Image 1 (cartoon, one colour):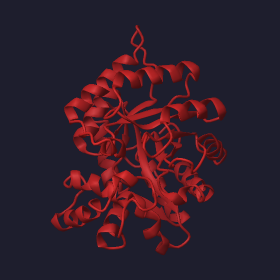
Image 2 (cartoon, rainbow, N blue to C red):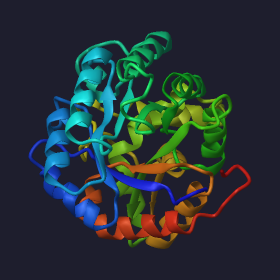
Image 3 (cartoon, one colour):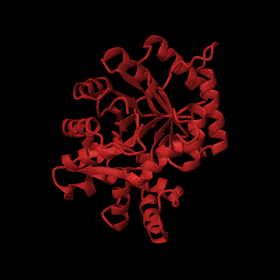
Image 4 (cartoon, rainbow, N blue to C red):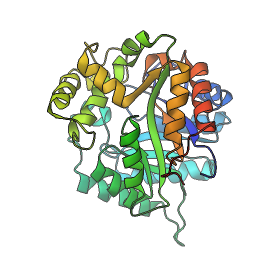
Length: 326
């Protein structure tokens, strides 16, 4: 590994809850390299407008939409917006695209098939190539992926993947290896839902808002996440309690202090005291990832940002290398 993984904070905060430029500057001051702006137009400020504001008004080294939904936005318009941002702020635009989650559900649209999504990724890639084949965002355009088929297709189409596979070390190790199986130079970042709590007993209520959406990912690919029949049943019970119309707010998932909730929390979230967050981050960083995008969807992330930033910085700075590391 040539350098420690970079750290970005995803600013997934509902309308009126926090000013993205103020929060971005605060995050940079705490050691984050930049920020992402969530794409969920019914719930949060527009990610394109806010990306421009952050890039123009802060010292963030990297900023941009995370995750821009190709389920509601045509790749040609996404490419045009990214080219415009890159022209104004060369070398600082960072973007992640995906099929969409709350944005697709909330508009009553079907989730694009993998074939359709892959076509969109290739269209986006081609629209960002200059005449000489140079990419406008080299190493700074990723596709979000959770399951094995999407990981492979995204790595092939874009050469960059944001893995949304939780925090269980074995699963992340397999995902990193899969992303680079055919393309060893693929940029691999990890999406981590992390939070520092002073008491382990506080983990359950703190993690609750995101459990349902995490459970849905596990249910969609149970073999990939190593679920047996009993575990799959538990994950399903959590997934159906999630209201995507409220995704990202405190009460999005209800009744989450049970065995199923614990299963999902242990596999997908990193909500623990600071020493544990640092230790597990070190192990994840040792898998050779290029960066970490920290989810901002947990309400306690903003008030707890100093402790979280310190724990994550210590983790990536003291990564525990593994044989899979570059």
